[in-house]
Length: 202
Image 1 (cartoon, rainbow, N blue to C red):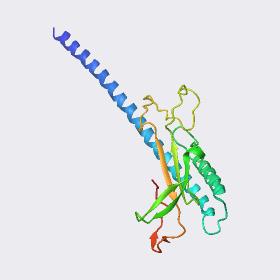
Image 2 (image 1 turned 90 degrees about the vertical axis):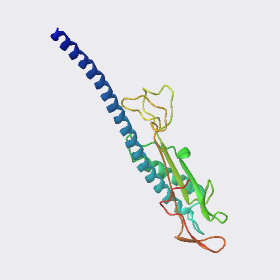
Image 3 (image 1 turned 60 degrees about the vertical axis):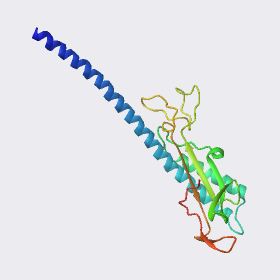
Image 4 (image 1 turned 135 degrees about the horizontal axis):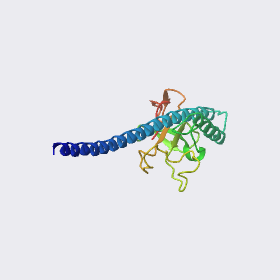
């Protein structure tokens, strides 16, 4: 009688241990995918910062009283620089980050707003002294799940299916603004701090 009872107990522990192993492996898989998403987001941010800075440097030739380049030339060069610098970075399973120059790069101008007493971002207004770059891994391509990887498609996780959520589809946005000097005269004659190169425009 005692032997049968002990045998039943051993069987119950085995079932419980098997169930716990499933739970443990599920948590490990989830942790691995979450870490992979965080790593990819960090890599995208590094690529974004580099692309925005590279594009911003191209804007300098279009500034000043006698600019060396026209607004259209600066526009083209800035987008090209952003694309090239983004491609030098990896993100997730991509050895080279994808950037769409027309969609992912915005050019604009910082102007002093006398009413608010702040520098305001005006997108699409030349001469350009402001750029914003957005890199993404959040695009959905139906039927592409098992096909060749598209540069900006949703991140392919190791274990979990694509979540269709913001956390599972990392993207990164960053910008750079440039001013001719630290203290800039406003239209009223006052001087105000210009936007710093580290400022991230909204």
